Length: 141
Image (cartoon, rainbow, N blue to C red):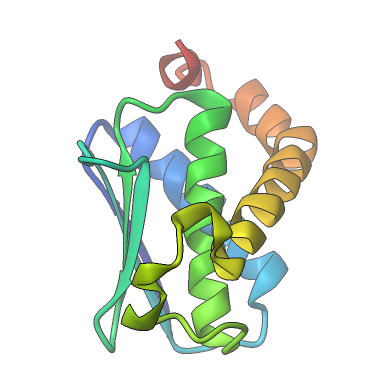
């Protein structure tokens, strides 16, 4: 079973976060049937977002100060790390700590793909979502 949950801030933002996450799963991970993703919208120190896998659940944190496109892009960045792990695209481990953050291949991939996913999502889905929700202004203000 696939489980997605968002925690923190307000209900509108949590539902928005879950909608983005489901869109990503449908697009990038359609064959995965056992997957748990928990997204915490919270204050994140020293980063905009994080992604940690505990063996059962992918725990994503996105900084609550991010708004609009920055928020969406950060969430996609962390979701790309989920995909990288599930598909074994890169060996992500402690051995990469000596490599500067921006030189890590899996980070470069996540930044590139999150930008593309963000544009696609905004152009297709977010516009429709915004039309359906009068509270969307809270996310981008």
